Amino acid sequence: MVPEDVLDRARNLLQRYRVCDHCLGRAFLEVDGRDNRERGEKIREALGLGETPPEKCYFCRGLFSKIGEYAEKAEKGLRGYVFRTFRVGTHVPKDLIAREELMWEVVGVKNTETIKKHVNREVGKRIKRAMGKEYDAESPDVEVLVDVEKDDVRVRSNPIYLYGRYRKYAEMPQSKWPCRYCGGRGCGKCEYTGRQWRESVEYYLSDVLLGVTGGRDTKLHAAGREDIDARMLGTGRPFVIEIVEPRIRYGSWEWVRKEINAYGEGKVEVLCLLPSDRKEVQELKSAEYKKTYRAVVECGREITGAELERLGSLKGAVVYQRTPERIRHRRGDALRKRKVLEIRWEPLGGRRFVLYITADPGLYIKEFVSGDNGRTKPSVSEVLGTPCKVARLDVMEVHGGRRCSGT
Ligand SMILES: [Zn+2]
Ligand SMILES: [Zn+2]
Image 1 (tube, rainbow, N blue to C red):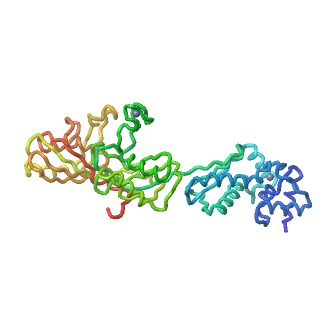
Image 2 (tube, rainbow, N blue to C red; image 1 turned 45 degrees about the vertical axis):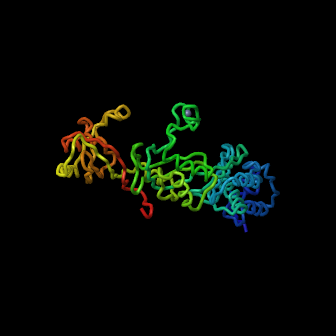
């Protein structure tokens, strides 16, 4: 039974416009029916009217008879991807949206369904049935974009985000560093590698990840970065790597992690590789984690054990640093204030010793040791009364981010 008020409103609509059963049905969701077409048919028959051929429909111009075609095109596109979840989005031309609003004006907007929603659901239903994939409206692996205006269906693969922590044992930058002469295309200067630095943490990750996923590009988002010549040791540095337009996704990435470690042997090691998301990227980017460094310090003269004890006074010290001379040309001059949270040392004999420093993020360690010609105060040189410098600097721990189990 079709309610009386529905019949009144439907009659009103049909007197003014030619409406196909699909569109009639989606204007009255309160009517029972398996789908919009069946709802529309019921209403029309109750009114004793003949069917309007879809292509003559004022509101959709026959759009709904194309659902099968859209779904087929989508399926064809999706065959190029290994994925688990998908979502459908539809672009509807402005004039059809304007007409849809006319329809709501006549029948009221309650219990109605837009063209967009209708197409999304119907195409989605068919893909699900044909391919056995799961619909995920929140964060799908791949997206199907139905463009009604251009009569076109496109498939887009969303990025994969993977969380991990890396160790770095060799001198190299963290990120990709394209050749400055060719911008990455490859030229004689870079021996056609397109790379200024042949190696970087990101290249080690990216070479393997792009290989196994068929992705187009990667973006490395890490919680800070160490100097090129500093090693990253201990529990590693947290990162999320984003794989752009991947073709293949995996349920577990552990075997990929092993591939990366075999490839980067002795240079780059990844301690875990776990599913992540855009939110974690934001967290890492805005994170201010304290860090523990290990510095081999070399001084102008021999340092006795008793003298080293004086370094204890630096624990808890607030260090004032003007922008170091080595980066002033890039950063401009400013004063920063950072706290030394922990400090301990191990004598190496002679003019050298090892210093372990845990500090607020942003403390310039090399300058904290050297004093940077008085631009950093207090400093190790100042406390020991002789010029000292960092001979080797390693990051031992970044205090934050998810732990990799077993580290
Ligand atoms: Zn229609
Ligand atoms: Zn080049």
